[in-house]
Length: 127
View 1 (cartoon, helix red, strand yellow):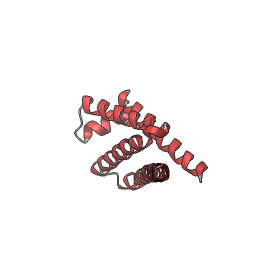
View 2 (cartoon, one colour):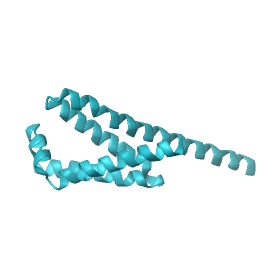
View 3 (cartoon, helix red, strand yellow):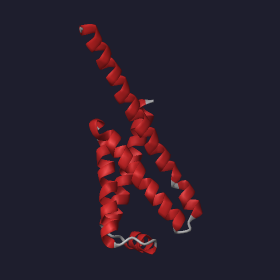
View 4 (cartoon, one colour):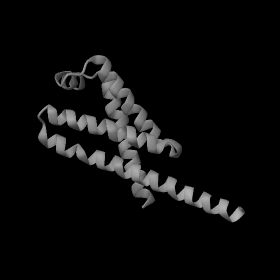
């Protein structure tokens, strides 16, 4: 199961970083699409920086939860924009990365909760 979790984290991190870089580099396809749904250049670059941050934060265990929340949020916004742009098929496929990012959030929360329980039980034993 650890291998599957690591693969999900790697996929979402790389997807977030790649999507963010395309926006920060202002690639023609990204700019045309996002400007077509009403975003300006500053908003697009900012959105890209959020995606990159989410991907980078996913890599470190301490910041994984924040990274997953940023990644899931950015992926959700992208998916909504895809639907607004009228691409139903790609919008439906774009729901999968959101679900995977939510799996990471769930796993991070569970890990944090389990560690908290272990710490609490150790404190009770010491007292």
